[in-house]
Amino acid sequence: MLSEIKVLEKCNMRSNQTDYCPCILDGLMNSIGKKWTLSLIITIGNFGKLRFNEILNKLSQLNPNTLSDRLKDLEKMGFIYRKQYDEIPPKVEYGLTKNGRELYGLLIPLVKWSLKDHK
Image (cartoon, rainbow, N blue to C red; front, top):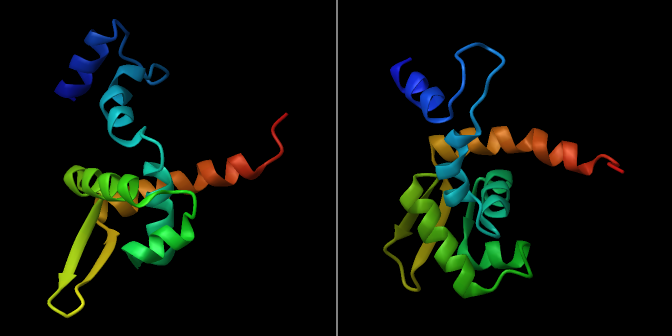
């Protein structure tokens, strides 16, 4: 409740149920607003666990350097985990963390909404 009050004060808003402060999204948008980030969350969420090349195959326009950068970002943010197996050749899988699965669940209605014919 205290953090909600601070956010409302920052946004210069009243505290009632119809006021939502967009300022709270600033940090989140800086994190997940980069190109390919939401696509990665959705793709990994759709398949559970994927390897690097599997992700590249599913998102064919994504280049390997950008994929590597986004995976590192998402891991730092706590949305995905990276599991490395001690094998030759090395095997690495990526999956969603609890927070990643929660975000994935929130994105599904947005994906469904975007499929509608919006004119």
